Image (cartoon, rainbow over all chains, first blue to last red; front, side, top):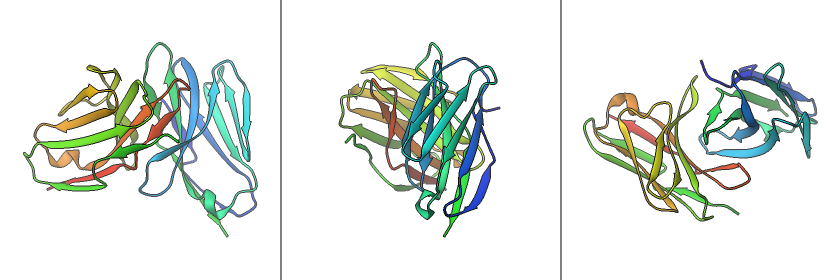
Length: 111
Length: 111
């Protein structure tokens, strides 16, 4: 199966609520990244966390990484309708140029 | 801002045709990638290139080849298109910050 698997597959929340998405992976990584994709478009990079980091913030985004559990979470605080998109985690594999993308979480924020 | 462009947004081809998908980036990045994206499967790496004329197979290279004659341009070639190659194709380039910048994607339909 895919290296990165997001959970849940779909999430529907009200505007103003927080959204949490999780990503699990299987092998050693250099870093883990989160991307966003609006319907039918390319992916946009959100945030990168390195394997020696535990938490990182960027605006309304908070990412955590637990290498012992091989998992990461993305928290979007005070969500907006414009946050409606699919979110993907990508793991940068140790010793390679490769990245493995998960299957994504579809987030819907209701106004 | 990094710009990654792809030659077509939508493409319709017939089975057996040779198909060229072109990707151009304007930031002098060394690494470039081709992915395909299918519902429920996420992004899967087809090929990547870490320098001019250098390439490595990704997870699903069968039925595809690539060409990188110039640093800014990375082409994906479907030697003989088949219906199971109907998909969304995404190109990305990566700079030293390990962030991938994606093009808008090409939606290919093979009839």
